[in-house]
Amino acid sequence: MSLILLASFVFLLMPIFLLIYIRSYNRHKKNHFLEKQHMQQKFESEMLQTRIEVQDQTMQSIATELHDNVGQLLSLTTLTLNSINLNDGEKAKNKIDNSLTLVSKSIKELRELAKLLHGEQLVENGIGHAIDQEINWLNKAGTYELKVNNQLVDLQITSPDKDLIIIRLLQEIINNIIKHAQAKHIQIDSYLENSTLHLKVSENGIGFDPDMIKAKKSGMGLNSIYKRIEMINGKLALNSVPGEGTSISIEIPYP
Image (cartoon, rainbow, N blue to C red; front, side):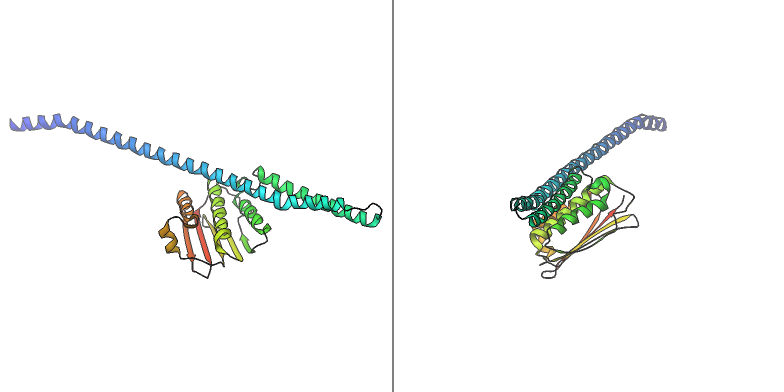
């Protein structure tokens, strides 16, 4: 009799346990879905912020180029044309020829700026071309001795979201060098090996103590750099010694 009662009791409890299990499973599944949705929203928010920052950096580059290069070329053209003496035919011809050359240079510069403005030289053409564009802006400053080994220019595969983050990382690293490093020489290497994109930037500036910067949790935009690396499952190795410069090596699964 007791066995029958025990069996009946267990039989009655089984649906209850089953119901509790199903509810627990559904709750866990819902929480997992909400967590995944939250992570996706966070990633999309970070991507939007990155796009805005890249666009802002691009517009700043265009503004600087218009002011420092195209503006200077056109001012020089105006100065040359105003100095023409029509009574001296030979000198007038030379100055007109020089003015035409300056105008041609201005047109070429404006075309390059138009390409940049429409994104043709950014990630739409691949990460290699985007890196080249950033290096060109840096090179035009004439402040640094640059050594570049960019093996990504002819890369046939792309990853637009990662490319956008990678180019923003490079911009932040370059900005840090300009603001803090007091460097004279910069070396930039980029290549793809075993489905991993490698980007390395080295300079011979004043260097710093990495542990001290990490402890401050604010210096030189490193937190932002680490955060972006984490977004795309990348790795970052930073080496710096006071008085001996800094090198940053980035590895990112690609595409």
